[in-house]
Every structure is written in structure tokens, then in C-alpha cells.
Length: 429
Ligand SMILES: *Cc1c(COP(=O)(O)O)cnc(C)c1O
Image (cartoon, rainbow, N blue to C red; front, side, top):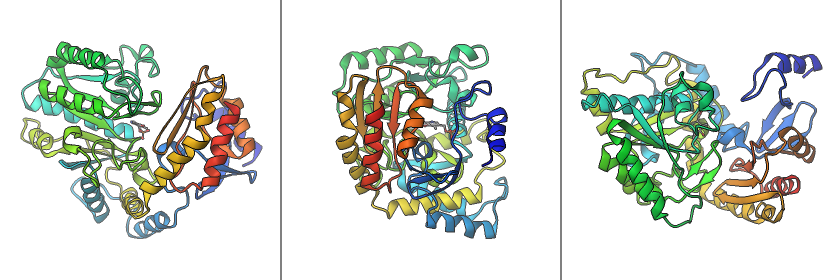
């Protein structure tokens, strides 16, 4: 890229969560292959981010390239209103197959945020269909992240989501504390009692409880025990709320199970954990194209279908895009045949071994590892521009936010590259 192109980028293109007055530096990428990004100046970086959870197989994946090319020769897109096609059906079948039992009605959405919008509309329409027209509030916990469009933003953490700024524009929902930290921690009875009171106070005007199960991602990289999922399920049942799991970040194996809400493949107690509605996205297409899905139970779909409105009120232009569906089918097939469990176990072991030592540093408050996710929580906010320049000079790509320096590499990362990634993080935090 020429200096004038970079200058255009700086002056005219918004990047995620940046300013056009004083933007953070950006690094031009020319290509990517496996777990490496190649910068325009020829330098190669080990990718620690999987392009925000999505590129689980790495980049330039022959199977995914082939699926995309084959589909593009048939058709890249047709409207989904009144038409259907093989890639959408094949994807729907796979999603029903691999997600927790009972989630067998599928809405294909064009991004994670949109899939959460759809989940929220489903919940409102469901309650409306039951005659509960005033049940339009959502209950959730602090520290969540559900996307950037208005509906999802209204259930994101009020502080990091800057709810103050958007007050008056955004609907108001009800927040309780996030579950105490620690994947292996015992259930905290005081927390559970407080959550019960919270449900009692708000349930009669609420339609659903929405959470990221076990791992809160962009809201703070917080891990909590799956034991709380049973509490959520029980409270929702007692008070007539739907339970929505946002598995956009956790889905497709990242935490060590295919989905947190019950690993369909292994049948791990899924009935107690099963949500009524679930969103998936990010890794759905292996990081190739934007696509997400909202799955729900037959009960939710049938209640909406038999209501006065009768239809689910959503239908994006690019719904069920054949290219995206075809590459998602190829990505899921590749995942299931790839030995992902072994890869995640291997990455978890590497993170324990090479990232955990960061805990000894004065600047570090906590180090936590779950599956293919490693988090270093610093005591103070990190200087993103400075630390990224140091990382790039060492040949790794990591994008910290706030006090968090975290990695979730592609599942195909080599042991040596993972070690370099971790050692570099430990060196500069
Ligand atoms: C990224 C993310 C979203 C939003 O997805 P987009 O594709 O960026 O709109 C929603 N929920 C969770 C948990 C996410 O991690």
C-alpha cells in the first residue's frame, strides 16, 4: 500500500471503535495463510486473534476456498423471500444437528448483531402471542456484550456500552451483577439469592433473560461457572421468561465444547442447560464471510406462528446468502473432521504453560485460561498503540482492549508459534 493510500485510510475510513480525529495506527495486511498474517512490507505475524474469534481454521483454507469458488459458479446470491437453495438447507441441517437438542428452528441472519436483534424480536413476539403485551423488558447481567446495533447495545454492559451517551435513544433493560468469576468456582448462594430477588422484582414485565454462557467476551473476558446456567434456566422457567444464549463468541469449539449450552456431540447434561433461543456467528463461516444464525425451539416458533402477527417480523436483503452458507457448511464439516478437541486441549495446555507466567508480573492482576482462550488482565489500561508496535516488532498480532491483553488463536496454530505468541505477551504486559 502506498503512503497516500494509508493517508486516505487515516483521514477517511472509520475502523472499529476509533476516532477520525486521532486514530490509532493501522497495519496494512497483504495476505494471510494458515495462522500467519503477512503485512504489506513482507513481515509475517502469528495471529493471536483469529480475526475476533472467527478464523478458527486459519486463513486461505483450501477447503473453504473451494466451497466459495464452487458456489460462486452456481450463484452468489438470490433473495430468500419465496426462494430457497441447497446451501441454506445444508447449513440449517448441520446447525440443528450440532447445537443442543431442541433448537431446531433456524433464522439465518447477516451478522452477529442482527442475529441478536432477531432473538430479541422472537422473545417479544413470543410473549405478545401469549397475550403478555407488557412483557417487553429484557433481563441480563452486567459485563455482557451482544453487538453494536440498538437492540443488542441496550443489553450490553451499561458502562463499557456507554449507555449514558445513548440514553433516550435506546430502550432500557434491567441488569444484575455478572456471576462471580472462575470456571471451576462453587456456586455463590448470595449471588443466587440476589438473582432470585432480581427476577421476582422484574419478571412480570420481562420477556427473556439474555446472557453469554460461561464466557463474557468483549464486555470483559470474564469466565464463570456453568453451574450458574442451571440457575438461569430454573429462574426463567419459574417466571415464564425465555432463556437466550448468545454463543456468537463461544460457539464452534472455542471453550472446549462445541457449544457451551450443551455439547450435542457428547450429550453433556444439555437438557438442564438448554436455552430457548441461541445465537451463533463469528466462527460460523470460518471467518470468511459475515453470517450468523438465531436458533429456537419448536415451542417458540409455533407460539409465534399461531399468533395474531403469525410471522416473525424480520427478513434481511442478504438473508441466507448462498456464498456464506456454502462456506459455513464447508467450515462446519472441516471442524467436525479436524480433531478440534485435541487442538483446543493442546492450545489450552500451551496457554497454561507459556501465558500463565505473566501472573508473576507486578503489572498483572490475573491470568485465566479456558479452552482456546487466554487472558492477561493488567492492573492498568494498556497503551494499545505502544504495545501493538512491540508485538508487531516481535512478529505477533494481538489487539488488547482496556486492561485486557487476550489471545484466541486459530485452532491450527503450531506449538512453536503459540509459544512465541505467549512469550511476547508475557514480555510486554
Ligand atoms: C461479536 C459478538 C456479537 C456481535 O457480532 P457482530 O457480527 O460483530 O455483529 C454479539 N455477541 C457476542 C457474544 C459477540 O462476541
